[in-house]
Length: 138
Image (cartoon, rainbow, N blue to C red; front, top):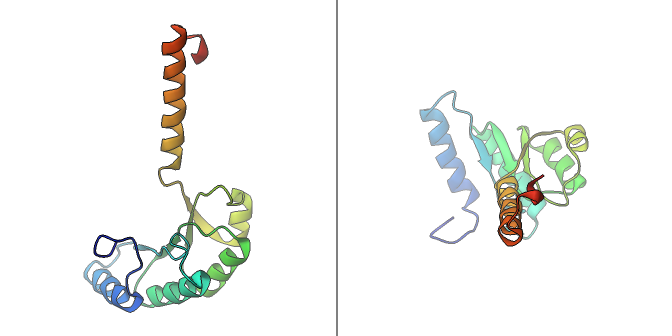
């Protein structure tokens, strides 16, 4: 969020802030996030590679790229950005084994599992209420 709007901050300005933080807090693991794919920015891969390399030079320890799903993009990020890559679960994201082979080091679930669990719980509770029975629980 920048000024209340979901958009990318200036990469160079963010890198300076990042460097200040990492110098002030040595040993802190900073997993930097870039929303280039999430926000569908033009040339998302190019922007991601630029930001990842810049942030690595300024003290980032990890690189979180939500909504990247294509194997080719993941391979490019792993190859060009010398930070452990963290991706976010998405319907189009490949399986864990393939992600590991591609070089992904962490997969974040966001709130997706929680939201799916809540939706299923709501359906089950509505069924119990409608049927006046707990049979649907078992």
